[in-house]
Image (cartoon, rainbow, N blue to C red; front, top):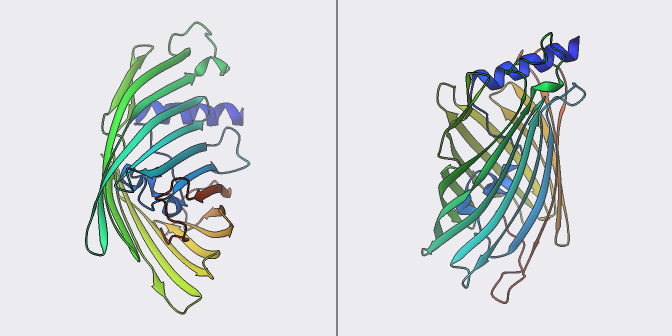
Length: 298
């Protein structure tokens, strides 16, 4: 009975409002997740997988899996990338595939990049798995829809700072199921920034902030405060709207990067006191002759 009620609530939420973008606590490690202009901006080849489980331990909780890769091309004047995301909650699943392109203008001590991503979103909603009185009810059937989408972003980046503005998915999408209009997606707007303070030769302090906004919803604010030791070991604190709190840890081993975040609701954000986990593994390397080899801050 508990599982049925949760599924019903999740289904109603999906039908009442637009699908929300996945949340990434480690966005600063791979800004291309929220801004296509980042593609190729560190003059290397990058690839990574991230897995996030929201409210772990709760039946049919939200989960997100993302694979992304990007690299600089044309002698580091442009970047290309690929991103595949699957976001699942209850009986609903959204799979998204995007190709990414960015072009960079080099300034005296920084650069400005303009990026676009284009692809499709496939939405699946299988309400037939629910225990209902009338199995023939058209509102409780399997629905699949595929929608085209595109987005853009701009990024300003230097050796010690990065900031960007983006709308990764510009086109709202809706479908009809059982005579009811379902709004699948609304535009999300992202503004983020980060700066690195060198406290010593071995210790760096890197604060970051992310503002996320969408129509008819309050702006969400993510704060990230981390310290890096000898470029390879990072630990820090995160908070989302001062209602969710967490710890992050990251280790670099050669070309590989491993990251972990756990979050715990606080301050009465929700009665569901379940921990959220986010895992990340990535690789950065000089694949082409004109790629850089040094460890990058961003």
